[in-house]
Length: 412
Image (cartoon, rainbow, N blue to C red):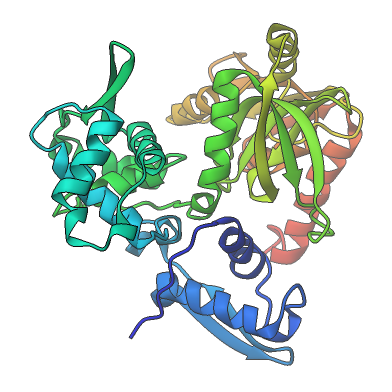
């Protein structure tokens, strides 16, 4: 029988997934943050969700467990199972069914009336100590209203609660939900809605399927709420080189950036202590706490508008200096798709056509070394490459020399 355990706090699971199955691949002997028993408990919990995708190998350090997922063969992100694991007390379950059943006929009642009706209709079959208290019922009504299960309206001095009307036919949205759940940030919302359907669409398959962002969904939600409400944030961020020593930062959040190359998500924000724009990787953010509203949001948003005009990726270099890059390409007959690709991928750059077969791409960016993987994808068509940072050009030609040495060039 599969090991099952419902959880209240997702932070521990998220940390474990990140440290062991995404970046660490640690063995039982290397787990020194808690006891060996904790390691076994966490491993069994994760196996209950991801057992079919887990593999292991043995080396000198012992048995190492890791995730192995072929994104072409799955239809749903398996990490969503971890996000949907939630614990409920027996009273939670009772209230859920009793309150919704009480309001099923469309009537609206005050919290006091609901408490009285619950006691008379349902809890009369239980000992007196099980009778619900008014404060507990109020709390549940507020919780269900926030979830959209109930709606509240004021009648006189009292709030009344009734069932929310079900106006959405999810079957009509099945295909959109199936795509959204696997492709978009916070796709766990789409996945949870799909759970309400008997049959899921199975015709989507993704060549580049970034699964790991699912573990950051709760953090992403807090960040988006802060951006929407223009609130300051207190981030607890894990250091890459010393993950056991988190650091607190006070920031004003601006935008969420998602890498099309590796699927990583970044928060772009203004750092109050460092007095500059900064990127934080979401998978290194341990907690995000909303603080007070920012009294001067326009000031920092103007910083962002100026800053983003020179952003290529998530790097700003060491001193925020701007590099000028110019690449001249030769396009042969029938290769107009190269021009279309440049227009699609140019970001903050400009594409200038010189003649029928030659064009120039120019961009000003904070860290031109980030462009190198993209520039190399045009190898064979590059007539000239210039950059105000000479290291970028040297590195490009050094990579070509290394490629020539590896494959022998064209001498044969």
